[in-house]
Image 1 (tube, one colour):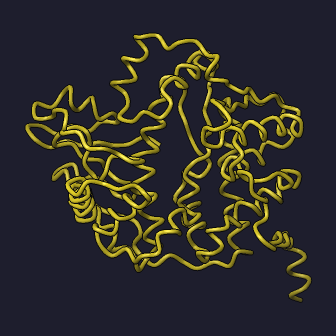
Image 2: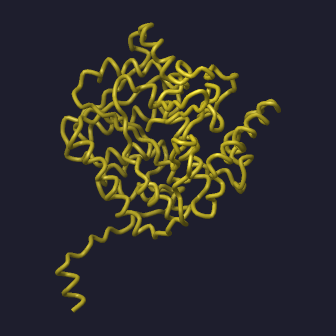
Image 3: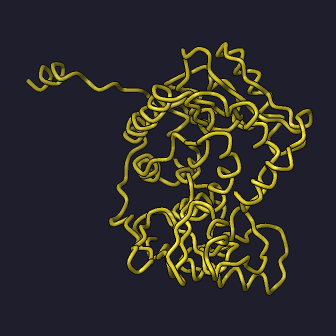
Length: 372
């Protein structure tokens, strides 16, 4: 959930915040500005001579060089019926740990990730739930608000709808701290609201609903093969926007360096390489920056933040991943009523899909009886 940045010039520095390296490294200065899109392009950062350590790699502290440790072998293939209970066990175990040892603050949206987390709250009273709202035309805010109101009724737990337009102005001192803490502007005003609402709660832990996109074929629309850093740059730049040639070449250079250092495309025969790129780039670069923004208010986790969970989600066919069928079936098993509500304005079950029949494991004695 938090990044590691490393610097190897006149001395070795590791930091969770890139600007701390800028303040301490003699050759660490603000780098030349480059436009960003869901993460700083490549493995470099806004600070010179400072790199991002990507997930699934470890740093050799003698050489200060990253070494990939996953994946080592081809990902296993699971049938949907087998992947569902396996992922279910891991995900529910994560949530139960957070709920048993901390005071969870849970974000509510109309999306699939959030619905999965919420499905584990059935029967739990006095939950701390929230969603934020700017206006009906901003992203999915209208849908989020509608589902938050519905979930309040279903669960008998109030969802605090944070209307940002009505919130107090952010103090200058807090804004200055945010400028040092973060490299990305998500919704900085929201971080102050979090700080006012939740900083005084004991053992508070924010449960976000991100990361599952790694196992849901997020970049399925990018149909081209990914075999080089240039293809990683194509994913990053893909869209209807026209870019200046110099920027395109800069981004290509940065992702070719990214691929050389991480060896990401060399894993394409072991795991879905686009999903691996989403995990190792977008989650490491963009998502960690979003989390850093709210860090003064609370620590943040996700029930999906486990290699075993992501391995399980990546082990099923691409179409199953694209439809999010592992998560939909877990939600249906945990709290069937939540499947009656659309996911971001679309039916919970895509097309003619039906839930996979749940087959509880037979007891030891029942197995013995039938085997006999």
